[in-house]
Length: 164
Image (cartoon, rainbow, N blue to C red; front, side, top):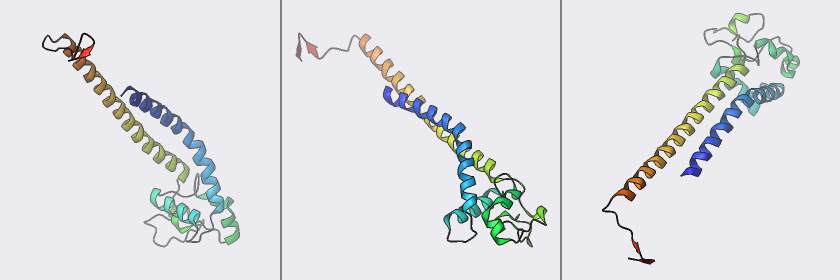
């Protein structure tokens, strides 16, 4: 039981360390994925970016102007961002940078990091709850053993070196 509590404590420390590491890793990964965006549906990176932008209501890494530095933007030469950057209420949005009010202004990186940190905090709380239950179990076992050893009705099963 004690080993489980120690393992849970180590797990919590690992997750706390991950919270601070996540931001740097997300920045590096998200930049790489944005560079490979090609706007086609079968491409996994493109689908992932479009999904994240639609779900989190964001556009680009830091904001919609990040798209101007991507290969996709330079190749298409249409001065627009993906349609997944369009606000839901903007029904006539075509992703054009000429109408920035139709686009999500907030970048995705901060929102992805925030979501990951929220998830990790839930995991940490679960690990802490598990560790607390382990401690409570150890405490109960100690109390039972202490009371039994003082109980006069309790007799040892070993008498004179032989089992009774």
